[in-house]
Image 1 (cartoon, rainbow, N blue to C red):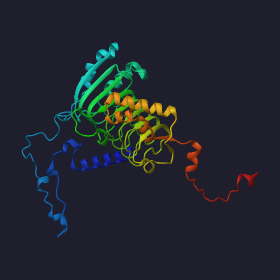
Image 2 (cartoon, rainbow, N blue to C red):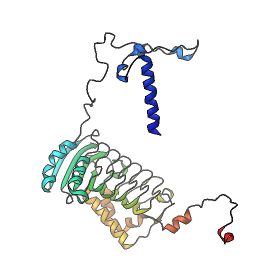
Image 3 (cartoon, rainbow, N blue to C red):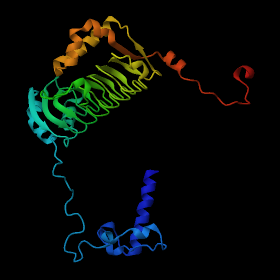
Image 4 (cartoon, rainbow, N blue to C red):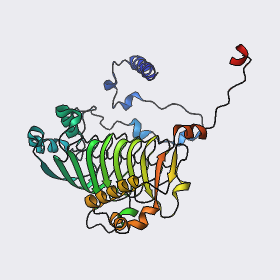
Length: 356
């Protein structure tokens, strides 16, 4: 339908150009002399509009080009870090030697390290490189899709903040984000990541000493993450993986979550009114295995980010372990019973018993 629509648009444009005596759009670009003002009834408000700036040629002597003179207008700030990263990582790609690379990052830098992930995949497939072979340390504000598709062997450590889609498609790499050491704010009360973090992730780990925006871990199917608060729709449509939230969550948490598990620290008893109960259940009392997994992830989060919140939880574990909810999918039978059955329209056909 979209192809047909634009085909018809193109046909009509050609007809209009032909009626004016031109063959292509380039011939009419910058030609206000081809425009005339349509007559409007007297007293119409359209009479108040002055179209002179639009209908007057800005280059009446035709001394300047009317069309583009370069193939692409690249903004001066439209730079990329990936070419530099690829050059610096060549030895590691070739020999597997461990390297640590350092960069200053800006929010104009998008999809940082995704080219490296693609090259690792091309050379080594889904196996990737040994964990932590290529460690990249960044300072500053990352643009969208920081660490997208990071694969096994990649570790990205960001001291600063990041925009949306961090770890999109994460498939084995590790991402660590923390505020600058000189930051004056409380990390677990401050958003340092944007929306839709870990969208479609299939593996890997994310540790962030701060809060994230909406739709955290949406469609996550295997990544492990520790975060200190999320906005609305957290863990939406999650089909695998483990998420630990050391703080508040927004409304509609775990909507459509069919697998995986989330542990949420809920000091104010807000989660029961904010989660989506259609497919998941809440548990305060957890098994020994659950508590061991939760403790290990909080400890790893502290070791990698220096989180004061994580340290407080570890220091007073006997208290805090009772303040977590375990959010996990209910059984298929329980979900089916919770879904209201669809009323079938009446039929004149006899049922199977009558047919028999």
